[in-house]
Amino acid sequence: MSRLKIVAGNWKMNKDFEEGLSLASEIISMVETEAPSGVQTILFPPFVHLHALASLAKGKQAIHVGGQDCSMHPSGAYTGEIAASMLRSAGASHVLVGHSERRQYHGERSSDGAAKIQQALSAGLTPIYCVGETKEERLGGAFEEVIAAQLQEGLGNLNEVQMGQVVIAYEPVWAIGTGLTASPEQAQEVHAMIRGWLRNHFSAHVANHTSILYGGSVNAGNAAALFAMEDIDGGLVGGASLKSRDFTDIVKANR
Ligand code: 13P
Figure 1 (cartoon, helix red, strand yellow):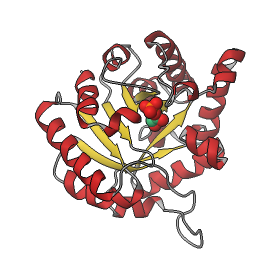
Figure 2 (cartoon, rainbow, N blue to C red):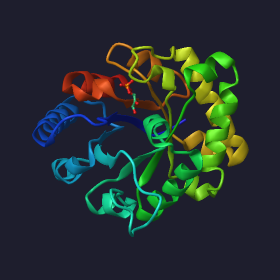
Figure 3 (cartoon, rainbow, N blue to C red):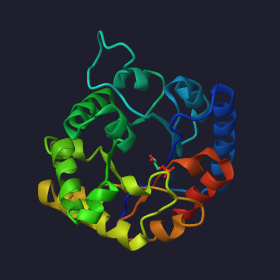
């Protein structure tokens, strides 16, 4: 099945402007010379770095930049918010939606994610919609229901054409920043369930073509085993994306 392979680096709130520019320059030159063809690399820096990074990545087919969030509104009196169309005009091609840190620290709900996805699609951005269960939800055993509800609320109102433009990231909250990675089998189980959900709610075509990324303590040592799983099409990388060598090795692991 031909699905787009993606390795995305979410820098979160790290790197000042100069540091960000030099990290991006290193990553771009390493990825350009070393990465297998056919893997899309996306950098998600803090907003204020976006335009400069987009200029660095200009003309490099395999390298894209995106925003870590966007507003659910198109424009207006929303102090501190950034519209999807602004990200696009600054050179972004992608945007993260519903990251667990937005859910955890900013009270974001999946229904907010649905509104943000609409804004992203209208602006011509590819949304990467993040889902995942907490440790308590996993231990409680009903984590697949939690994820199904996140999918339903975030994506359930899209039509098939719109869904065809969305990427999904499975990021178990207990694995983010903890060094506790989901095993390849644990991740594969959830990715297969997500693909099943896509098949039931949209179509076999959508299910077969939607890239589903794994995130949560991905590093250069565990990436290849995760990416080898049938339904894992790449990674959304936090901590290890802040080191050019590690991040490039993760991109190289997605072959
Ligand atoms: P870590 O790779 O640092 O666990 O972060 C994962 C993540 O949240 C990426 O969005």
